[in-house]
Image (cartoon, rainbow, N blue to C red; front, top):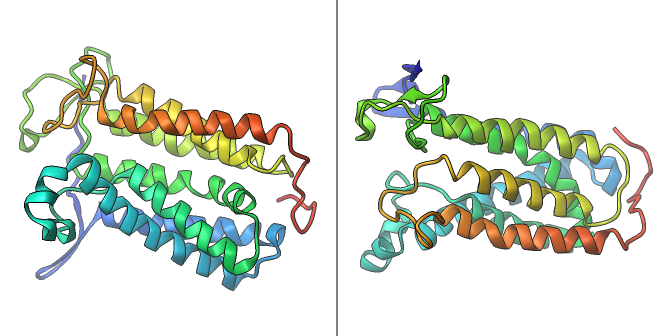
Length: 270
């Protein structure tokens, strides 16, 4: 059994202004995507400035989609009771699935502006995303969020009393998601996309792999206390929202295998 590390969720405190590690993780994810995107910008004939614009589009999509998704999927009752609660970003959180929808809308707008095929752009974006996902899960862990279910595995942790949990050791589920959704997903997608592939393949693999990782970890992650299990006594909201991702991803992979290799503006790989 391991003890939960004592890390102050506040990274920087300047008088009344507090900057949390969780917020900084968004900066880390966007900065990493910007840096990696610049390395491969030539594939789509984009300039480094274009990559900056793309990251801005994505950031807006993440923030708006993530918050709206959380309100609709996890806090609908609060939203209906008080629509202004949507803007209380310190009360509640962000939804990955909502953020994904926001990024897809942003990608559609960016693709139209730069005359790119939608899946051509999403194939470019997909390998840039996992570092941000992993950083976000680290932020969750530091912020005392996403506790796991009770377990006796040797690496189980006793979570802080402030979380309202008992003294039983639990799975560090946020760290599992950091490893799978962040590290493993990035390595696989970055490696697979090192050379041209069929259009839509990388996007489909992102949906399938993330969906499989998320669906699996949900079995050891504590369900949201105000929702519990949403069906069958074991299905969580996270799993329910992930199922359409898995189906869409598999369909996209099958469709992509019938497409020619998409070499973009150049066949060079990085």
